[in-house]
Image 1 (cartoon, rainbow, N blue to C red):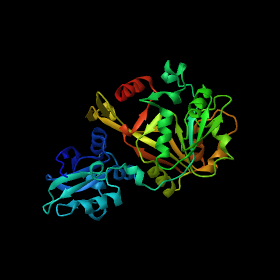
Image 2 (image 1 turned 135 degrees about the vertical axis):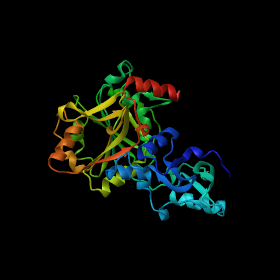
Image 3 (image 1 turned 90 degrees about the vertical axis):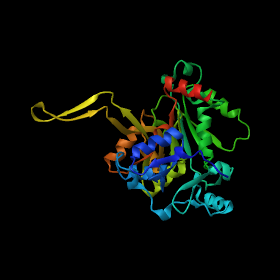
Length: 356
């Protein structure tokens, strides 16, 4: 099967990490083909970039600095038969497979959807962790829509966002969900009562008053005894949550924040000055890349003991408490467009129109 529409996957070896992140977002892929002198050089995955950011490697570094060794990437040769390529793609869950000739020319690219014909996630090992979804807020940023329905039931296409969040966790094996409710809670309960034969369990944490983004967790002290996820009810993240969990456990974190990279171009020339106000440097419309909190977390169960009972308490308060006692708080990055936040009315309208 020959596919010539693959040039948009190419990125030169000397382009920066930031260039690669932006390209992945632009073409909606998590894997790129690195080229040098128009020939195959290596592969770059979103995992390579995430590991580099976690190590503190700057966004302006060339991608060549973070590439895996040749023996850790998988490509096909023009002599391989299709059955062999398919077996390799299945074994290593490869998004696509470049086909290389003896001169390192890229003669074809075979894509998972065309060759395998299955969703990749359906083949992966499952994890079964509790998931807490914070759905008690009034959704003031989405008014006037949330005057009628709670934020958790705001539709994206044919489904409310809370259903899409749950399905993303069910896909990796999670089946126990705790939903923290307060504002218009009966509508949320009724929605789930109307779902017949659902393959997951839903329990409710009922706030008698607003308790912030983490205050209701104290009600789970005797119910959750394992590592668990916490998610806001207005965010979707295009990321395999098993990778977040793996990072969390390997680094022995008490809490892991999923961050999204955010790029901002300052629309002015930036001046730096020294002694006597003398100009030392001018940067014309510089770009700044920083990490923002997405509202998705992984927590260890002992942290439930640190949530004060029946008090207004944000998860940022919990994070500060952990840091003050020198506990481990990790940050796992995803690309800017891997994060969807419907909490703002304008962003929701744009996404709703797009899904349309």
